[in-house]
Image 1 (spheres, rainbow, N blue to C red):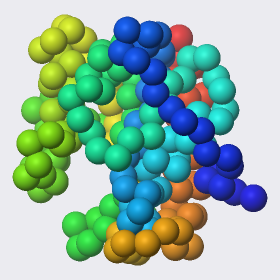
Image 2: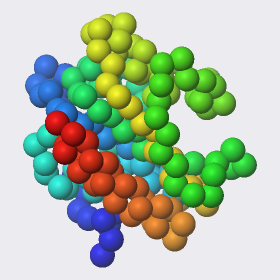
Image 3: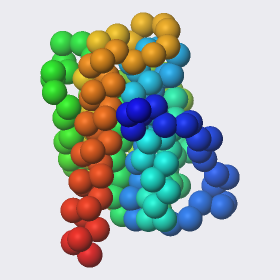
Length: 175
């Protein structure tokens, strides 16, 4: 059994009950579009660790209601599927820096959906806080309608979970 096939958990709390966490993992994607489910599944695998310093959210889209959670953390990792010609064939984790233009190609026409850089900017504007953040892209084969991960997405998701684990060990040892 792999990390991604662990029992699913219902995640999320009302904004007023959110606790400050040192690390925030946000996995996003549509679980009804095959490999696009890899982001939420990675977040759920991390949530199953049940570590008090980590908050892990599994969401369909990045929306403004996540800003409160982002402002309440020191480090954030956004995890999603990556497909198409603009995606590398290997897992990528990139820092999200102020003024970063890395998300311009990911512009979404839905006014209710954001990208990681937009949410970080909103966190800074509303709360005067912006955590260090990274964008973790998992290469996938198909985001067509359907369920179940391809072997590429499964392996990439398992690798992403291991990378997040190593990341947490590294950053916890720095404090």
